[in-house]
Image (tube, rainbow, N blue to C red; front, side, top):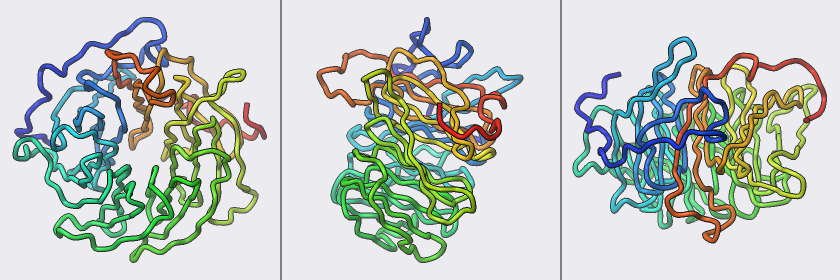
Length: 363
């Protein structure tokens, strides 16, 4: 897809990467240029091409074209838009055809950016709103609708051609995260509520339960085969839960992102679409690759020198993006002004992410 006449990222946002020991998980990881001036809140890949989009607390939504050849990776800044008044942007998603990016954030707006077009004042078109900031957004491939989850305890469904939501659902508490995979949507809210929905046609609540984890939910991701989801908490633990009965598979939880008596939040969970394995990233600055079916860790990378706030596999599964950025888990007192915010790209080897066979317990 051509990007046409979209304006490139402003020159002042072109920063240098820190480099050196422990800057990235692996020595050959590529640092993405122009990653922004504040915390990186989400990373998402186009489903149809190696186009990577980030959202930032500085109000920016940025897009790169990522090129890979023989394991060598580089990212080229292609375009950037900004939410109104540079309000923090908290999440984004792509349309199924990869042509459009939807973003949400603290301006309480659901916005639409058609790649290849430059919107007026470089602010993406508003297609919806909430009464409070919007934490998460996803595209429903079965209906071509956009779903947004807000701190106003609402799920809203949008047709980009209409100014009003085509449907709303009340949540028990603030939305902390949501994910959609085919006809399965899972939502994690405050109060440790988790709700799963069937979004094939009219969205229908399938199951409502309390999180299997004892502390606040931080992130949630649906399995690629839609039989369940993984939920991560602020207390260094992941829960694997099945919404559909699968022979020989039971729900369970395991500890991760811990070191001695130190416990760190699980900031993001993302699945590899090809193998059904997944990655977790956390406040300890560590990336782990896991196999839920055989209950084992496939790969643990060395810790980098700051927290990892978000991550995502590309559609092909051979590129893994992760954001090196303060996650605010220790509050404002631990924030160091001027700390770099970096995005790194890791070329994924098959032996790092492919299931290795039955083992039986996480290590």
